[in-house]
Length: 147
Image 1 (cartoon, rainbow, N blue to C red):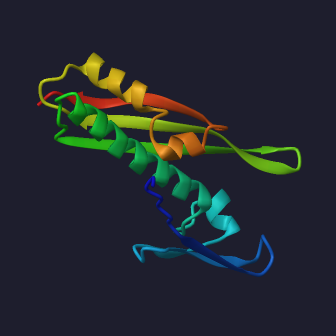
Image 2 (image 1 turned 180 degrees about the horizontal axis):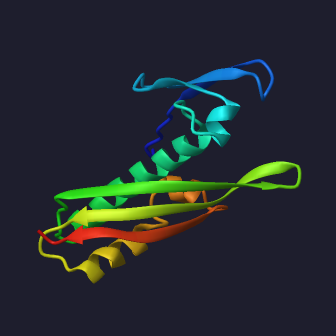
């Protein structure tokens, strides 16, 4: 039988969309924090669904890229992936239209073009990328060093 993994998260909300507040909890217990409409549209020190999506994609992509590099004999010293999630207002609704991933890495023995080639090939490989198939995902070159 194929391995099946189930992960959980909980969102609680009280009040209207504009005046209400909520909390988000990860099933692992690693994070519980507040969120609100203000955290989605202003710089308020609370979480929001868009940054959680960005964090999920950045984390998944970093692990997938590490796996691809190591599988090709190029174990990375470090990888950092920064995500920018773009949400735009359309008539009657908001939509996430773009996620930009800035990829930074240190991988001994691999030149810069090869590194970003691996990154580009990995862009659609992780499970979160596939789950977000309806959203454009772009890679941006960050810093790179081969040792």
